[in-house]
Image (cartoon, rainbow, N blue to C red; front, top):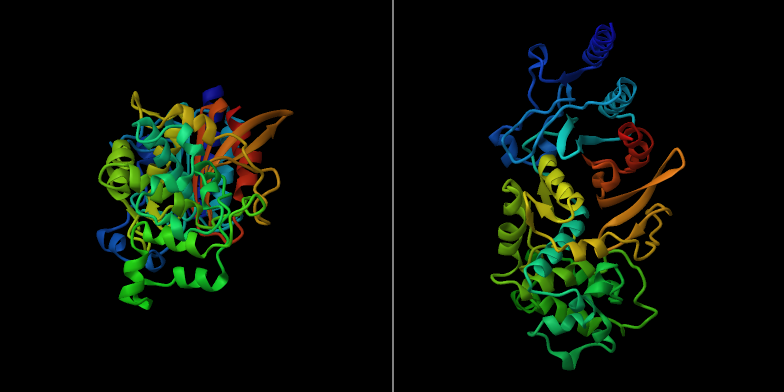
Length: 406
């Protein structure tokens, strides 16, 4: 009798989704749908030229794509499952903004997968500032492999950049440490004119200027032209070249440089090969943006954090580093950051309150809606991608999706 009622509820939900222009998939033969795939031509073209899906794709039993992502079924109390499915339908209907995917992993398995608008299962999505979180993981990888130590986080950052000319540094340059940069408190004070010059496209600069900015020359330029680095300047200031400083140190200490290190020692270890990661004007990989990857691969990075830096039994990221990186180390004071957020090493933290109990969430966050959300206590990770200007969906996830797994 109970199974019969649940079946009826499922059929009603499927009918409703079909009428609203949504494809629902599970493992039963009558719903043998696969996630939407971008063609080779679409993969090579511009994201904004990609057509929107005719129907949103929502699956409570994701397909095993043999990509290193274990899959399962969304097995919740029927009421909770209805809430998750309804929320996904609202996202499909753009009630919460312009989002392209939502994936949920519970107890180590991908149990929910959905794509909307321009979302495709094999299409790398712009990560925006979520890349800062990945750069933090890279640093944790260098510590795990012994190229840096936890003590090094509190040493002058310039100690790791031997090509710099210290005689030309601004006063207080030695005050910048990896720790300070990782909490967005490096303290650089670059004039607006200089900042504009450093942000120009390469084809707008002379060959002489380009040569000067290559490699550690970019950091030399920053440390020569900054106002003095003081206690007052070393306060939280989002961006401000801090991810660039961290990436420069990674590049300097690892064999073969940062670009190869990213591929060999992090992404390829997770089976992530379908990605882009652009280089900065220095020739080094960007530390805070301009990378893209698929939603499933984002989920792998989230799982790596949830598993305390382990992947398939191998300790990839220093657990000691991750423990520090995910702490509430500083209050981010930018106007657009919610007041209940804290900041660690390029990762946000906040508490999600459900029926009087707090559950800590670690978040890598990129503008437009890129989020990796990890709630260790619930063995839960949620990945979101999108291009929403307001990007307020996290509160809805906290209020509706997370409680369904408690």
